Length: 333
Image 1 (cartoon, rainbow, N blue to C red):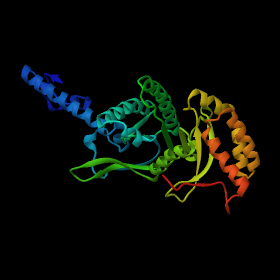
Image 2: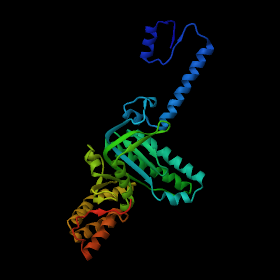
Image 3: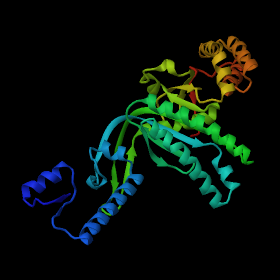
Image 4: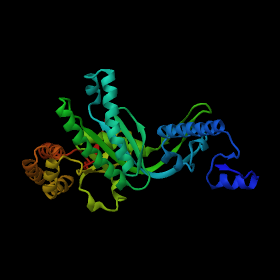
């Protein structure tokens, strides 16, 4: 603010209106440029800080600026956590030099990160081969982001194939629940952190995508809070007790992120698939075998259908374990 007024009340009015500094007339060119350069530097520092701690995280703590954050600040709220992880990343990394590996991870994250932001979420952590994102408004936003990531991955893989590079697969897990976001550390080194069982469960959901051979899995807690369920395509995959948990979780596949051929086949066989799983959980394994065989005749690459078919065939021959209720107990993460 350049002003001829020098009364304290006038200056306070200007600062309260939005100015962050002032120069009273007459002023010198050197003073003007020095102050301008100082504010440009402060702006760059603030912009750089926001790249390391997302603005959304800071606002969730009730602050507008990172300079207002204090050690121990925290807030608890219900959010949806999205975990996206590159499958067999270790094997992929072994075929690359450290420089190639870094370039690959950087290229991947530059594609996927903005999709999280576009759907009203923010990336809480880049984990090398994975992304952990938080959505504070609705699990529907998180699911739309998950579908967008899978669609973008298909385009990315086409480009990798054209360059003779290996294609990649990404599993995505979603879970909704209570989470604490806060600032931990000490007075000289602070970090933005999330503390919650919700994060662990979302990570387990992602891990289950490898087990079932799916692209996107979400928990019943997330599904229940999606208002426009008809906008998506789901398949129920049963109850699971993941490693380290005592409670069971109902899980659902969303196949909107599948490639066109896979999506069309799953949509075409959805009713038969659902009938087969209903029979499976009611121990009518002969009907399950008949239904899922029909599904696989149309969609031979349907991994969940193949998995449940093999289980049904085994139970039809040898019987189910005692007190079997259709719950899968996962011993691995």
